[in-house]
Length: 259
Image (cartoon, rainbow, N blue to C red; front, side, top):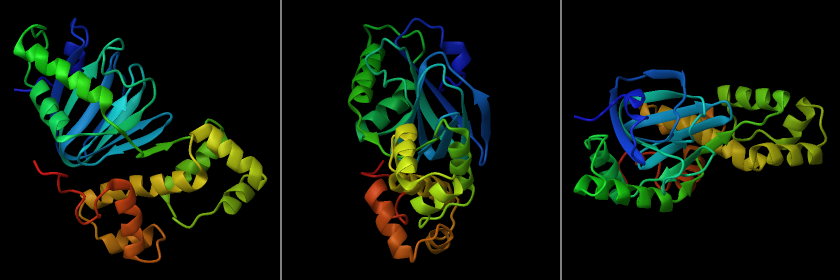
């Protein structure tokens, strides 16, 4: 039986502990935070993690890292089974102080599943301890995946970004945004990259992906999503999607490499 309450295990003197939960469709976890960093993996379904700094989405074979002390809310798309680990700051698998999405290899997926059945006060020298040590090593070397929509700190620019997520358009332009904000094109592009870490074009694509993934998980048609996002055709959307996710939208719910 997986351990499922972070509050009951965060104080335990172990570098990493696992927790697992089952959530009904459309369930939302209100704003909260953990003392430890959390790597959240959806073994089934899709999770969207929101923080004051942006939004991160984890489709299959991805996991979201949230550093300790960062307020966040979680939205479930479909029925969701989560397998996550809470990691101490000084542990090998600490992934830094910024939210990110990482690739989950078949080995890491199996280790995350196993970790949630290991008692929190496991013997570090036992097989359970070895499993957890290997998990930390896998987390530490997992590649980062660009599935982030960071928000700028400037209030007006942040409001513009939030509004885009409500009505995304793949053809929105720098000229339109800079005009709306009363900024010159060059000043806008410098400010946008400085505050988000992304070019406007890269951020726009990430935002479209963030919106499309939950809709695909809910069973909406590729054509409807593509046209709603402003793509000229489903094939144009599919090309962009496959470049970033690695599989076509029609396949993305199927586990990469099998289960």
